[in-house]
Structure formats: structure tokens, C-alpha cells
Image 1 (cartoon, rainbow, N blue to C red):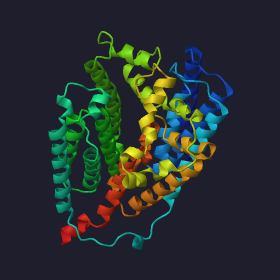
Image 2 (tube, helix red, strand yellow):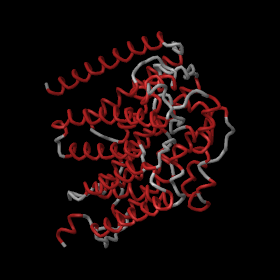
Image 3 (cartoon, rainbow, N blue to C red):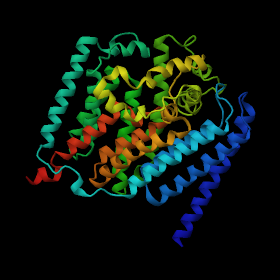
Image 4 (cartoon, rainbow, N blue to C red):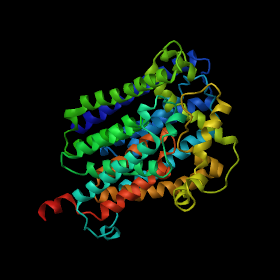
Length: 447
């Protein structure tokens, strides 16, 4: 009887989502000048909605899994994209559907394999010699000292008075800034596996340095997103998540609204708004007449990226797996010779969408398409294989912090290729090494 009731509830929820989405889809595509009622946009909408509902069903049965999170983020954002709210969006074509769905489905398969298979314990390093508390102290001291050195040599961004992306980049020093970011996330990952209340001190230090002193909305958003995922995962394991559903919902809404409000504030102090009317500026930036600033910020940083990704269709193919080899190439050759894609995307955007000034990132598939064109799924599968092992390791050894960090990168997949940017890959590899050579907290207590 209980099983039947759950199935009935799921059918009701699915029906509400389908009805609500397609009513909104019809209204938006009939109301906006770039409305797309064509066959391929309808196909995208139906396909994305169907896979989204599949993810919802899987979540109900299996809980928070990496492939479910990817489905909700990637295909949920694609559903938003089909509303065509921005005037800079172009009609969908057959190749768009091919790239969107082949890429999404291929990556889901690899994530699913990572959640299904396990690593034999003897694969990992068996050295458990380092004391975790001492390791925390060493890493924290290195992080604070390097951050202080960077501020001493280049200044403190929040005190600089200039807050454009170009101006803020002037405060970064090649090498030191990257190491600081790597150490900050390693601290967050390691401390998230600890039951000590001292971890909140580490959280505060990282947020203060990375978010406040460096005046980075992106850093604050990513750190808060990571901490939210850690909280949800832990309470799900303890089966207490139902008690916190309302609080989690409020926190998610606060992050979204806060992202928009901080963006508004930053726009004002940069002098980019018109008569301090930020809502008009952001709406013009994505060419929409929806008078809702926070939503426009989110749409400009997520849904529209499926359209900015189209820029790579016409670019020359590298005919290599340069994106996959970039982390290794960065170590060997240095940061100036690799990840050129990430340096050129601003020029591409200004060239094609000259008025689009909110964001110039693309969905994570873009660099793989630029490398191999229609065969992009080959390189993407290599990335998926790597993440399959990352997930297997974090699951098998119950490293919730590392698993939560991977989920964070998966959620950010619609904002760019966070999944295989060198710095973020180094964080995962560094965390795995350190987690493999430290004594678990339980053993330290018994020692």
C-alpha cells in the first residue's frame, strides 16, 4: 500500500512539473521576440524534461548521487534555456540537440558507473602516518602565509577601489594565487570529514580570505555551495534531512538572491549601472524584458551558456585531446601555454554577442567540441573515466568532503568547464594523496 502511494505521489509531482513547465514554455516562446517554437527547440524541451523526471525518480529511490545531481543541474538548466528569455539566443538546430544530449548522456553513464562499482581497498596507499591535526595546522599556516605574501606584494583587492574582473586579476600572482586556491579547497575538504568544531574556524578563515579580502562573489558562492552540499550529505546519512528541508530551501534561495544582490552591488561600484538602476542594466545585458534582477543574473550565468557554447562550432578544431591533457601540460610547460580556450572566450563573446556583457562562459562541453568536433564524446569519456575513479575512491573510503567537492564541480558544469580546469583537478588529486597518508580520526582518538 505504501509503495502504491509513493508511486501515486511521484506521478502527481511529475504531472505538475510537466504541466507547469510546458505552460511556461508556451508563454515564453510566444511572448519574447526570440521565441523559438521550432521542432528542435521542442525536441530539446521534451528530451530535457523527460531526463529531468528520470533523475527525480532516481533521486527518490537512491538519494543524492552524482549522476542525479548532474541530471538536475544540466538538464534542468537546458529546460530553462529552451524558454528563450534572452534576445541573444538563437534557434535550436539538429547539431545543438546532438551535442547537448550526447554529451549529457555520456557523462551520466560514467557518473553512474562511479556510483555502482567499488575500488578494492589495497589499490589505495596504505601509509597512515600523518596526524590529521598537525596536517591541518601545516596547511593552514601555509595558506595564510602565502595569502599574506600575495597581499603584501600585490595589495588587497577589497581595499583597491577598482572591482572589474580585469582590475581584480591585477592582484593575482602567477603560482602563488593558484596554490592559495588549491590549499583553500583542500582545507575545506579535509575539515569537512572532521567532527571537531574547529572546522568552523577553518571555514571562516577561508571565506574571509577568498571571499571578502579578495572581493570575489564567485569564491563566496562556490564555498557556500560546497558547505551546503556537505551539510545535506551528512544529514541525509543521518536520516535527519527532513527536519532541515525548510532551512535548506531558505539557504538555497538566500544563495541565489545573494548572488544577484552582490552582483548588483558590484555593478554599482564599478559604475556600470544607469542612474543606479541595476535591474535595467542586467536586463539589457541579456536582452530581456523580465524585470527581475536576480533571475536575470542566474539566467545569464547558466541557461544562456548553452547558446554561448555555439561559438565553438565555427572555430578551428585542435584535433587533439588538449583539454584532457591540460592539467599535465600545465605542470610540464607552465600556465601560459595551455588552457588557451579559457583565455579566448571573452574575445569570442564580444565578437559574436557584442552587447552581452554579464558573462562569457560556456557549458562544460565546449572545449571538447572545440577539440574533436562531432567526436567530442571520445575526449569527454576520458574525463568521465577519471571522475568515475574519483567518485569510486571517495565513496569507498567514505570521504564526504571530497565527494561533496566533486558534486560542487558537477553543479558548476553549466557555468564552464570546472570539471577539468587544472586548479580544480589538482585539488582532488592533492586531497586524495593527503587523505591516503593520514590516520583516520577514529584511529587518532584510539591512539
